[in-house]
Amino acid sequence: MDESRAVADGGTGTGDTPAPVGGTDRRDPGGPRRTLIALLVGVALLVLVVDQVSKYLVVRDLQPDETVSVISGVLRLHLIRNPGAAFSMATGMTWIFTVIAIAVSVLIARISARLGSRWWALALGLLLGGAIGNLTDRLFREPGFARGHVVDFIEYQKFPFMDFPIFNVADSCIVCSAVLIALLGLRGIGLDGSRLTDRPAGGTTPGPDRADG
Image (cartoon, rainbow, N blue to C red):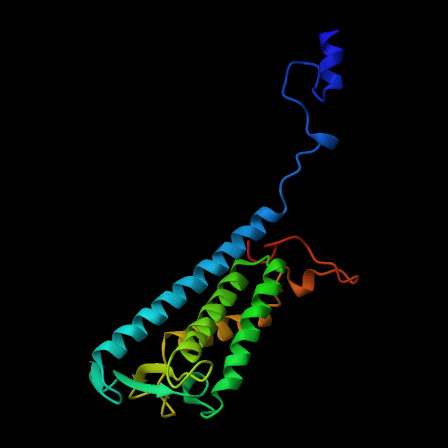
């Protein structure tokens, strides 16, 4: 009598814990993806904090166009206000880059639900943190909302083959993200973590993190 009741209640009838519904152990498929989203957000927040703290310290301690040597003849701090894009490109178009930064941030938030790769989470975290870092300057610094000038202060004095423009932490993270995304593309690793060569003809993809563990 007790054994039949246990079976009716979903147990095994042998005194063990009830068997999972359907007879299989159903793990939460969203768990790994939430971990990757947390990695993306954590990297973005770290980049944002380092970027804004470094800009705050430079603005506090340096005058515009003042320079301080870090590595003699190679690297120095040189404070400028940049109205253009990363590395002082396209000056005079600040509002356009404000819109682009917002669009990039929204796009990353939307595609993060498809994440299946730690490397993609890292790349998108660097990109998001860099975009928000410079966007913060454009929104809240002089000369006005959405037209603010970005604080740049890192200057290479002897960069091979070119006169390297002055940049900041956010710029460097954006470039690192672009390089990492290019490498992932060359290796054929998709946003969901699958390799292009492993995808069946029907277009479906394997589960998360199949390509990078």
